[in-house]
Image 1 (cartoon, rainbow, N blue to C red):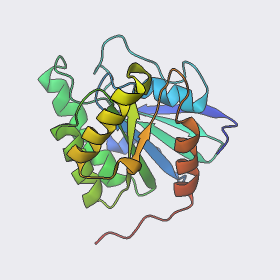
Image 2 (cartoon, rainbow, N blue to C red; image 1 turned 180 degrees about the vertical axis):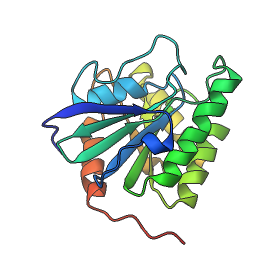
Image 3 (cartoon, one colour; image 1 turned 90 degrees about the vertical axis):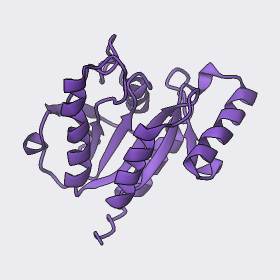
Length: 200
C-alpha cells in the first residue's frame, strides 16, 4: 500500500459519535507510552498527524483518520499507565471495549507492545476480547531500535512465548528508523479486502 493522502476526521468519546461509513478500518491499540502516535506518524509519513503527548495516558478519545480516501484508521486511547486517575480509566477502558464490539468494518487491530517489556493482563485481556469478536490482531513490537540485535531476538522469543504464538507472527518496528513500515502497510492492504467472518 502507498499512502497518497491522509487527514484527521474526528475525535470521539462515545459510541454514538463514531463515524458511520463502510470503509475498511484498522485500529492501533497499546499501553500508554508504547510509541503509538509516533508509529502512526511514521506509517503515514506525516509528522505531527497524531499528536504525541508529554503526559502518557492523557488521551481519552478515539481519533479517526482517513487515508487514500477510502481507508479508516482509529487511534485508541493508551491503557495501563499507573498515573492515570482511576476515574479516567473507568471512562476510556469501556470506550475501547465498546468500540471493538461496535465496529463492523473493523478489519484488524494492531496491538503495540514495547519490545523491552513482557505483555501483561492488559494485552492479554484485549487479545481475548478480539478473539471473542473474531477480529484478527497483529502483534506489533515498537522501539526495536532501543535494543541490540541479540537483545531484540531474545525479547522477541520471550514475548512470543508469553503470548503463546510463533515469533514469526510478530512485527518488529521502529518509528525512528521506519523499520517495519512496508510490512504493516502490506498487511493493511491484505486485510482491507478481506470480509469479516460472521459472528458465532
